[in-house]
Length: 106
Length: 121
Image (cartoon, rainbow over all chains, first blue to last red; front, top):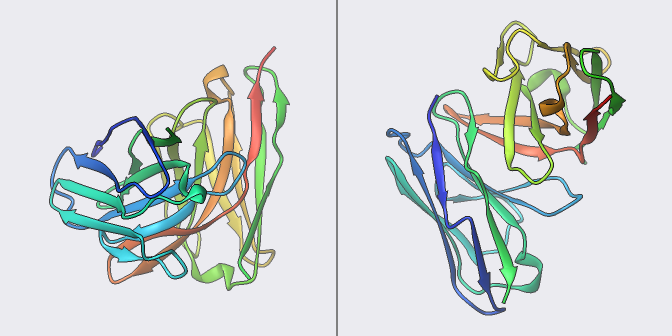
């Protein structure tokens, strides 16, 4: 199976900060990479698909980039509702998720 | 709107079986592949299984292969996951998710709220 490794595992930020989360695949996955947001007790929400395409209804402050093995999720200006855990997912082969990045309030 | 509602979770003893259900509404269920994903307490998301739109293809994570069976009833817009020989490490919230495919790209564009399975004696 293809492994995906996220970093950092957690981070502390303030409202208005720029936040960057990275995801590295164990082999090239081209752009078969999605990003999800998950809050406790809620359904996970798709943010970015195919590495850089913003899912309908997702705020423009979220963006994704990368191809091959290295990918990035960026939140340009963190809002209070963005405190959550974020996961990358590769779908080049049998789906696998990164271990998650918890974004906490500083 | 798209809704996915899981049910069937609960407390079950090790070695026993459980059948989870996911009732879908708001879209043409028979047109989409469907997945099960789980989250153990304090852990991240783990993909479990997928079934194609017509039920002809099924794939499983190595961690559940041989103990899980995914199935669907398109006439009732319902997805199932049978888990046998339950182990404590199967304790998790189980989510169903709709697959969205365009070109060859796949994502999970809608998820349910999950159902909690606790394996304990």
